[in-house]
Image (tube, rainbow, N blue to C red; front, side, top):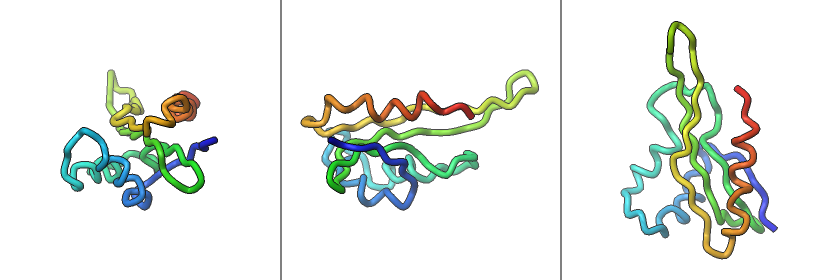
Length: 104
């Protein structure tokens, strides 16, 4: 059974093999942007990985940002990319569970 782990920029090379094997043909630098936003996000992580016996078999990328609306600072979190190896698709929703628990 796979487990969920928070990921950050240091996880990029491990997750890139999963991304590179997808049908989305993007340069490595494009994928890296998901891990290293060009603005301050207030978060130390960029998503969650589904890990089975040390191998990353799924990834859900999160893009955090801040917006001003009517003088109030709104913190947002967008789902950017969601990849799961076929044999682990039944565990895909595990990646979403910690996102739904975010309260800040």
